Amino acid sequence: MKTIAYFVSENIKTHQRFIYNQIVKITNYRTIVIGPFDNADRTEFPFENYYNINKIKDLKKFFEEQDIIAIHAHHGSHGQEILPVCEKYNIPLIVSIRGRDGSDRPEIFKKNAKRYSALNKHGAHYYPVCQYLAEGLRRLGIPAKNIHVLYGGIELDLFPYSNRTLPRVGEIRVLSVGRLVDKKGFVTLIKAFKRIYSQYPNAKLHIIGAGEDEKRIKSTIAEYNLKDVVILRGAMDSKQVSDELKKAHIFCLASQTAKNGDIEGIPNALKEAMASGLPVVSTRHAGIPELIEHQRTGYLAPEKNDIELAKGIQFFIENPDIWTNYTERARKVIEEKFDVNKQIIEQQRLYSLVNTVKTETATKKKTKVESEKNTQAATKKKTKVESEKNTQAATKKKTKAETEKKTYKQSESEKKTKAESEKEMKKKSKTKTKTEKSKKKK
Image (cartoon, rainbow, N blue to C red; front, side, top):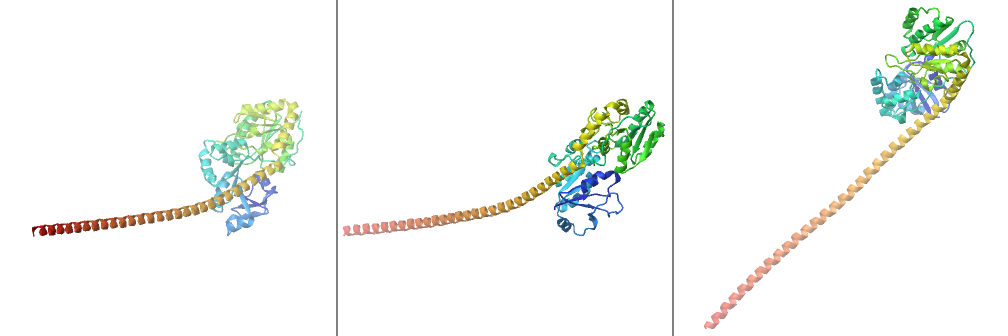
């Protein structure tokens, strides 16, 4: 069985279960994982076949023994990191593109274009998680033939569907899940929720996640006097998130373009909420409109607009009778396009294309070498024939020249002989005439 090697620069984090699934659920290929660190036994996502690439003494032999047909990196920066190895040992490279690494925004364009310029020379294949990122990659200079959209799938059995209803009394729970970073738009969401809370004082906002913007988010909560109704729950694994989705009534994610040019692909948190039967509110950002159809499977607002985002949340609070229609359609979208099992099948199909390209490339290379050999042989043969022709022509020319010279000498000799003969004749004639005159006198 052929092998795909997955390159990871560090152990997979809690929120990266989707990467783990794309490795361990592969069945048509043998899978191994390589990285520049020692594998930790006490990790949430352990790998059975992991190798520290820095401790492999003979990589050429290793790749041959493992029968590796490609190396798959799960981020643009990881692809850049493993590229020298792929180049040295002539191994095809596959790179998954998930967000910032596919951004063509002015703040990050130059950096990404430079990164992929080197990968393009090697003929790398790219798997962006949405059409939006695929278009960005094309603008970054990547050939369209090397771009294949591979939507990220989720585990449907982990996020079962259930009908939701708006509670007549008690808490209306709005839930949001994501890393606490700029592109998740939590500051905008908190501003929007301030408007909701003023109209629906029994509403609360729960935020699951951790990250670098936590201090800023806490400051915003305090600024709007929402400490008791906006609750930061911290990071959770997928099973814990699934449990929290069951307790919520509305899901909202205010994704936006970050100041540094960072963007989303399609957030898995939205897919999980839609699969679970929650009405979803989000933004017209990056690949999200490929997932949510406005006022059919969810509600979309312009990014960084707290007023319109609040209208989306209010839309569902005021129209609980439409929830089932929206959520059933949403669940169907997830089942058809974002089921992890279906996406694994597509992933394996794309691997077969890379293997085919590798075979075709090797064949072309072999054909080119043979063609060059044949051309060289033909050139030598032609040169030999021309040389022989030139030699024959030179010989003929030399022979002709020698013949002409000989003929010329013979002609000159004959002329000289004739002249001498005529001179002798004249001399004899004069002698005869003189003799005859002498006789007459006598």
